[in-house]
Image 1: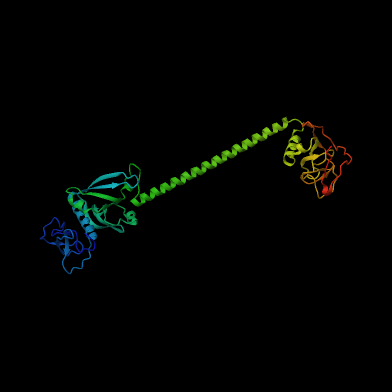
Image 2 (image 1 turned 45 degrees about the vertical axis):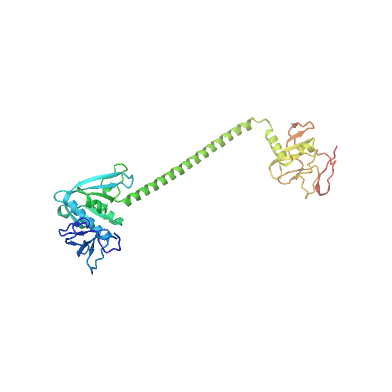
Length: 376
């Protein structure tokens, strides 16, 4: 049956019952469900057997609208006849399939297009005082809008329009529900779904998934923060332990070991090749009078090595004067701890001295303040 065809798939017989053109006699009185005009059975090769309006009819009923009407009519007839119905439904969350059977009481009546609040139900089962007990919506091509699904305050089922199955059933009608608010009244026994519609259940699933993701992100962030705090605590404990060990180490160091360490670091950084150039020299570890930093001075007997930046070339000073590497102060070597390197390569600590006597200038300065010494 195509939508552009003028025929209709079902009609009403003289008794007001739904008539299938393939099953009823050709001679008979039949009327259209939409316009109530007389229709006749037509059997053709192009289309299946159907009812057709008489010439000149202006009825605009389509196959879809007629099937929708036929389904409502047929559902009313069978509910009234068998006084019961069964419904197949599926939980939209856990997809568990359920089959429920309902029985109508003697006081119950069945009607079409029944008002339910501000909406209308396609088919409804009425109780005493015309109170709606169960509402049915016929799903053919468009599902019930969400506002109507949530606005129907009674138990309702949106059932699949399946005329072939409905008309062939010889007993209690079995309906397939595509939407319902049953779970809002009887939560799913497997997953606990209590949504009032299929769309609401799916939205709840998405919201629960989003909440789980946010909780997992929060737990991960909390775990990272805890791990960071733990690392910082361990680092603080390690630093505290190292500082305590350093205090113990410093207390246990022999006399002038700190000055010897300063000397070693100074020579490594500024004069790494001094042992290949000088076989005998004396250094003094002392506090500079200019910048108050602990540094290394060379005494006046062995001069300042001429190949280093220890010589201030822009200042005229005597070749026997000591120079500070930090601030450029120069003068007599201040009081400190002296270390002498012998020709044998051993470093011997000399006693602390104060203002060592200066030797007369046996060497002279070359131009631009560069020092030199005699090879012997």
